[in-house]
Image (tube, helix red, strand yellow):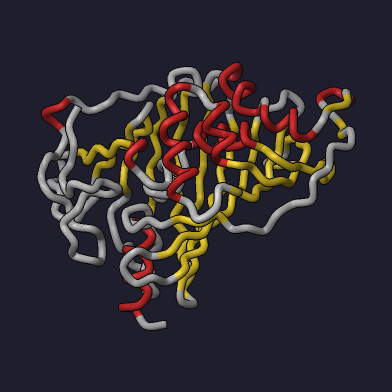
Length: 299
């Protein structure tokens, strides 16, 4: 793969959510409602345990977060990584998202700062003609994927609320994540069911995702600690590139650790939000990420 192809793949990764027509990977998991080892040796139904995982995060309050999103299309594979923290009680988070380097090891783009808020995604250093001191604001309910892949990182609480729609699940066994003992579950969630059971802040976004994906099924692997909190969550999606009609496979992984770490997120003021046209990375199309109007939106 030459450098031009690699750069195009990286730009596609950044703009992954703007050319939607998403389809979750349909690799189903066998239903298993057999009793599984629960917290502190208790017994629990895997489906019920997973549906409660988002609530356990709210009880924890906040945590540090690391994300990765791996995309494969046309023989090209790129990975976007994020690092930051999340306040689960107030649904606010901040991530620094880094695009892959080109084959020579040169960064393709400055790190992007993303602020995650109820109903909105804010991006700074978005590029594509946006002034360096301005933010781009996207309404997540207007995204066909509900912001599960648009920003190159899945909103940690939205990812957890997808588990509220767990349809089938099996307990795999005990293992460790980052030195913490966890229980590994494998299953499939239904986005329509997740939307019905989600918090008010996420309901519209997950409903949009349920309609925007080719299938509402989301295969996943979840690793929960003995307090029922998600330590690692891997979800698998696939969508069709709206312009080139080529399939793109996406694996989104969220790691949560350092529970209780304070997270201070300050949303930009209306004057700091870019209201002009935004070119899609690598396409030249003048459209804000995930919006239909082609313009940034302000509060």
